[in-house]
Image (tube, rainbow, N blue to C red; front, side, top):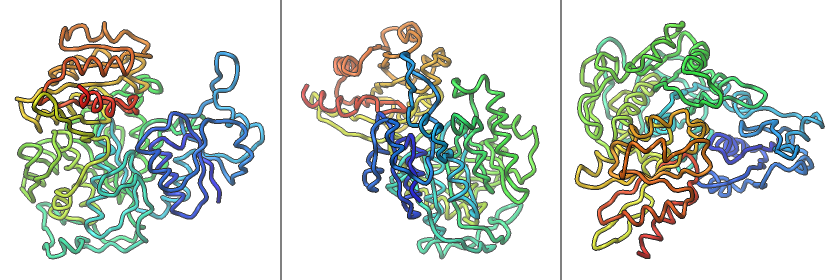
Amino acid sequence: MHIHILGICGTFMGGLAALAREAGHKVTGCDTAVYPPMSEQLRSLGIELIEGFGADQLALQPDIFVVGNVVSRAHLADGRAKFPLMEAILDAGMPYTSGPQWLAEHVLQGRHVIAVAGTHGKTTTTAMIAWILECNGLQPGFLVGGVPLNFGVSARLGGKSKQFSDGPLLGNEVRSEPKLALPGGSAVREATSVGACFVIEADEYDTAFFDKRSKFVYYRPRTVVLNNLEFDHADIFDNLEAIERQFHHLVRTVPASGRVLVNGLEESLSRVLHMGCWSEVRSFGAAVSDFSAVGGPDAFDVLYQGHAVTQMKWALTGVHNQMNALAAIAAAEHVGVSPVAAAKALQTFENVKRRMELRGTVGYQGGSIAVFDDFAHHPTAIRTTIDGLRRKVGPGARILAVFEPRSNTMKLGTMKAQLPWSLEGADLAFCHGGALGWDAREALAGMGAKVEVADSIDALVGQVLRQARAGDQILCMSNGGFGGIHLKLLQALERA
């Protein structure tokens, strides 16, 4: 079929476009404010991108329009529709659906879906699980809200259906490993005939303007990871309780033969499970959890029910990534991959683009300065990202945190009071305060001379340049393109 995707450059919709193209469909799409990495992926796939949401796109006459949740029935100040194409689709009675519904009906049916939900770490954990399964011969399909460096694409259909045995399904490089007998039970689940694995980032954000349920209710997972749960998305949720209810809707879709993997440190997730759970539950993270860790986040023992079963030593930093790894190991174990094999795969995991991604290093004042890019935008994510970099570079190097409160929640100012706490680990902080509904200078005033605020990207670059010195680590954080600040900083430092 020919599908035309509205909002095709979002990470989810862009991944869906890649899956549809791989499945043999003709794919076109439209969007505004295109930025990498999704724009680069779509162009590499030869998918035609149309700028804007003009009603003239109705002439494409696709079999169906797939509508992203960026689209609304909003009108501009002069009365014109903000998304005239959507109005034209409705007026003409053309067929349309949401991205999650199209995915569920055309890709996920018959698969063993492994869904990763949580306020933080969804993208990284999803990529970890996909890589573990890939290294162990399962050829998983996946849709990740970013581009895993090990794969180079954000989505793929994966291998054909297969029968899972009662032994570990190992790749060639680990096939000599013996089956791991875990205390309290087998390392793998009993044999069952299900489709090939598909690993998906399970977002709690709403599905579309015509369907306000969370995206993840469409995925019907057999294995679900509940990574963590904090208040977020203040533009659509009134409070944490409302998000907990949506998470429980996800739990309701897991079959009795499925598994719910829950962060044992999160009270909010305990409340979710107390609403009712009809599946096997395994926990991770806490000392008394089924899966836990002993040691620092870069090198640690993995414990199952208190017994050490394998070791992890890898390149990633931060306690948050240690937790992500435990979740990934537990999820992979449910489909037959032993923790030994999972840990071995994670030692070669290269993370995801825009997750502590080094964008460049430049010589400066007789030394060098490194510029990193990260997707962090929630205060907790900002704090853990800075902590991860601090563990990587040590106490001697200065960290300059450059951030943009760009998410809908941050623009509303709902979490502005948490920003000073989130930035405590940085030596200096620089905030892009333009286009906010609140005063960033006032919100950050308690940080004193440790923070500067600018209303434009160029002014922000200038502030950083005046403070930078050899040996600094500049960490840029935003869930958008951030006006190309990474390249602008590197170029300005080279010229200085």
